[in-house]
Length: 160
Image 1 (cartoon, rainbow, N blue to C red):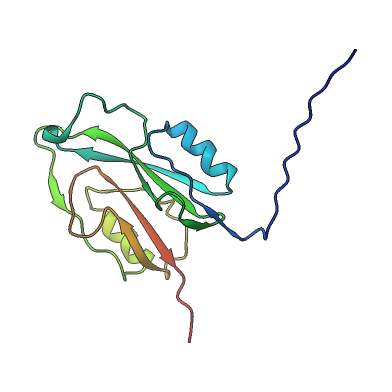
Image 2 (cartoon, rainbow, N blue to C red):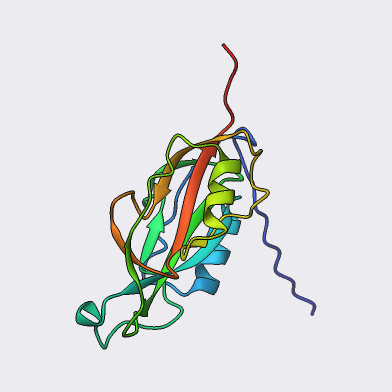
């Protein structure tokens, strides 16, 4: 007797429709990758350095602790989900104020980050240089350690 098991996946709705952002917190980076790909999203993984005073022994490596957008947010298919794992800052690691990049073009941001101690999470070709940054994480003015990954949301300017 031959048995077989067949799984059929049916996707409905418009192919460009928004999907609910999954909750990626407390899962491994590999699992987060699978979760976003199943929803037609891309993953940008980065690092967020914590002060030694804020470090806890239960923080696990390669586990997601921060994400953008927030869970359940309506997210266009093909968009990126950003996740951060925590690392402990070391003595002497520079603590800096996160610059405000909102309102600048993507081309300007890329040039500014060439000499910055912050690490760019986005693929540098994720949008046109003329696109305008509409959001960033970590937020402008927040204190972050050098080496922390920064993520941007940008959109193409629409002519009036």
